[in-house]
Image (cartoon, rainbow, N blue to C red):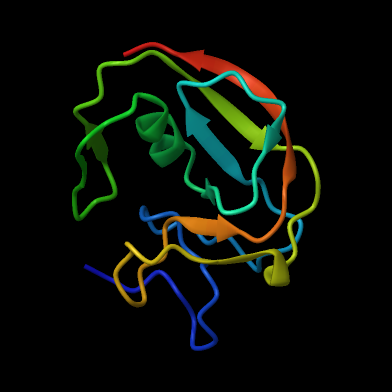
Length: 122
């Protein structure tokens, strides 16, 4: 397993070794079984598209292998959204359920506009 953050705690890797850069100007995703237009403050976002798809299925468990492959046990069809506005570093913090130094999921400090990308079949 490797670290996904730099020395400043910035999320920089998608779990498959692909660099993501800083928190500004990058695509952020949210997966849910709900139809939404705006994401509420306190919600989770990620730069990892496959992780957002897994969350859209309302799983009770998500497994990530060492090579970054993601599997979930969800049973619900869902929706994959892209955050439709810029996200600044001050707009987010690591999700408390994430391991230290491994923040694949971040929590928003303010509401964010969403754009539906696709339905996500199970």
